[in-house]
Amino acid sequence: MKYFAYGSNCNHAVMEKKGVRFSSCQHAVLPGYRLLFNKKAMRENLPPDIGFANINEDPTGTVEGILYDIVDDHLALLDESERYPDHYTRIAITVQTKDKLVPCTTYQALPDKIASGLKPSRNYLNHILSAKDFLSRQYFEALNKSQTYLGECACCLRKQEVVFIKEEDRLHMLCQPCREARLMWGETRGRRLTVAETEAIMQQLVKGSSGFPSIQKLIEEAIAAKIIDP
Image (cartoon, rainbow, N blue to C red; front, side, top):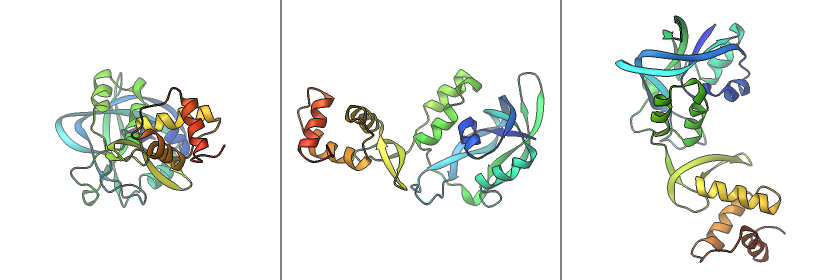
């Protein structure tokens, strides 16, 4: 069956993780609709201001995405992941591919599951952006400029764009600089630092300091101060 994805399912890895197999995929455009991030996330560990992708009718709008040809029996897997019929409903649409119009199915959020003022997380937006090769440059660039959710970083405690990292069954919010620092420090240390270790280094050593001559020196100081294990 033909399925049009415009949200996180644009990422092939997400589809594979859900166990949804497809025989082909291609760029497609849905005219007469507009992409919004007004679907309430309503996930246990996510902040209430997070929004998922949704489409609304708009005569002047277009939505780009991926047209999948999925295994018919795997529609149930998609329904479960999209929380159909409680959160999304299925609608019949027609998309434009490179050479023809194709009838297909997609999902649209139910009216009681949408709200204004929501923003996608950087993680969620990146799933759509991973389909760069399937999107027009103009559409990709516009998406990449979308305002994302701002949260308090678990390490530096600053409110800014964050990514969500799952560790020991908990979701942590890290800003991009702290995430990159965690990876670099971990490489120097020889293992990935935990979020708690990164937070301790940021708060006890980095914050308010005049800097360190090298990452290695920073790690040595962290070990000496018993912030991380030797």
